[in-house]
Length: 57
Image (tube, rainbow, N blue to C red; front, side, top):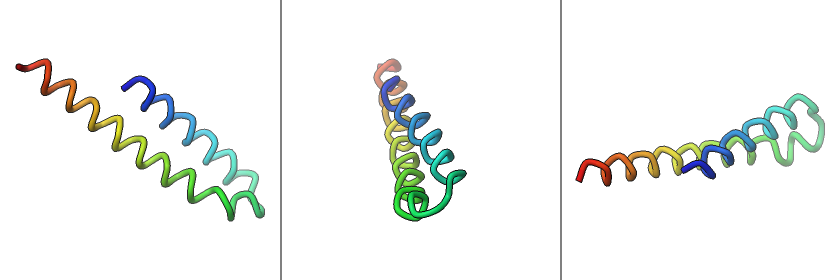
């Protein structure tokens, strides 16, 4: 879960940095980095829910 949260933060920071820079790099990687952030957030939430459900039993 901690690794997933680190990946979310890393992809967010990189995505914002690429978008601020603009140009061809942004056109090529900006949207992909933000999509990766959404997937990593989903993974982090799923792992959190799994840990929560396992702690209740």
